[in-house]
Length: 527
Image (cartoon, rainbow, N blue to C red; front, side):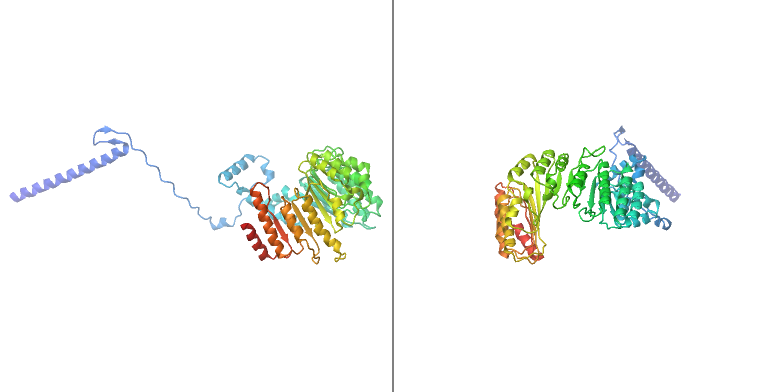
């Protein structure tokens, strides 16, 4: 009995211990739950909830590769410029804003179309047409305006009629995209003169009827009216009338290149008159760039023609003019500078050594007036051929704001003439003494077999011309001259630190191997 009583007491103690453990576990669970709810049962008081810890960042989502059935499907192309203008402006602007927020502002959503435009721009018209039938997206890109901004129209022989038909069809379909046109009038013969003149006249009439065509620039090439059309007076007059009608109807024209037309003074003045602001129909832009190099035929004497002088007075916003001495004298220069005093910034003059200066000479006082009237005017002179120093001096006079000089000689005359060789050395010394305040570039290109001794003149040019930035000559210079030029550059750089303005100089001389050129550049950088 005693043993049974002891066993029962042990069981009671075990049951009591288990009950206490269960109560303690329940209390711990209630305490944890209360702490989660912000209530602390240990002191029977309400406490403010603890701050909520920040949530961990969401895990990166790794896109799964598409199934095999969808991997071969092409990516959808973005809308073209035509679709953008029909109601999707907000979506495109939103996409552009999103791409700018990404960092670099690159329109990645337009990349496929941009790539196609670059590819089609490298193809000719036939390949472009074949590519346009590939799919709808390619056909949409085919009509991108940037592909048709510049067009070259050729009128040659019997092909002129066939080309004229294609050109008219092009103007009907895509003509309003053209902004820069180049017209090539090839030299005719007795059988093709009428064909070319008729085809060009039809083309101009069709072009003028396209209301959306707004040319910004036009270039006429291969139109040799002196020898090419000299024996076809009737067809020549038809071509000139067509050109005049073409220029009159272009209200937005800003640039005209009429170089090497070789026209007489009557037809040339009439063609220039059609370019003036007062003659063009409903003009919206002023002409700013005009190229008249070799525009008049030799011996024309157009500078003394009254109509030509009046026409040049009508160009009031010229910024860049390219001429030769055939179409320039003091009267024409004064007329242009007065009409375009606020806009004229660059004047390029071509001078041929085998031509006489005569009435085309411009005095120093005239150049000083022009430079004072046209602030910031820079003059570039191209000299074609070699001549005596006196002829150079008659063109390059004091007072001219000379900025750049280019001399080119590729003739077959006697290379042993000492006067021609000495004239180059004298010309360089003359430039360093007269134009040391304005000269910026000098380029002299001679025949390879010519031996010119102008080392001292080059050193003097570098030393005196404070704004000289580019020297390009193709005659051989001694090695000692390089050292003298480098010493001169070092002295000029020291002077620039004291307040004298000096630009960087780029030197290009024949005979400099790449290794020698690199060593000189390294040496120059350390000076």
